[in-house]
Length: 129
Image (cartoon, rainbow, N blue to C red; front, side, top):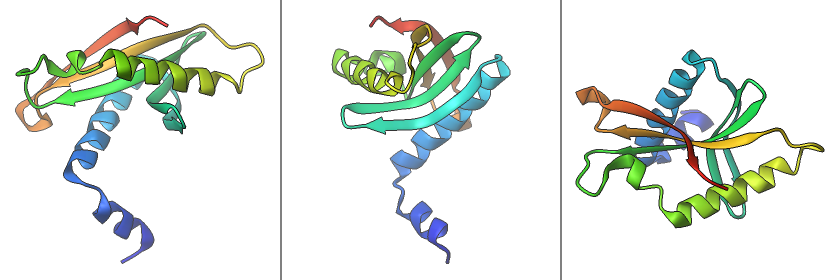
């Protein structure tokens, strides 16, 4: 067993499901014409699942998947605290630019599992910074 196999085996089922949701969101956004800039940007204050380019606009994407809508669904799970952490991570990401481009925060909400044909919803400008 190689190093990557050992790392993959240490991932929890929840982490694997999150990775699959991010893969699906990334592929879907690319089919919509966005270009991937970075995935899983992490800093002390938070994490951004996907950083995409949409024309001149840099898009920070939060991917949320929920098995059902019993507690409001995937979109409702982006709490004010999570939003604040996304904004902080985006501010850190933008420090690499001398003149930061226009930005927005989008959410990809997936309700249900991939096996049941879950719906993907793209919420543009979902978070105000």
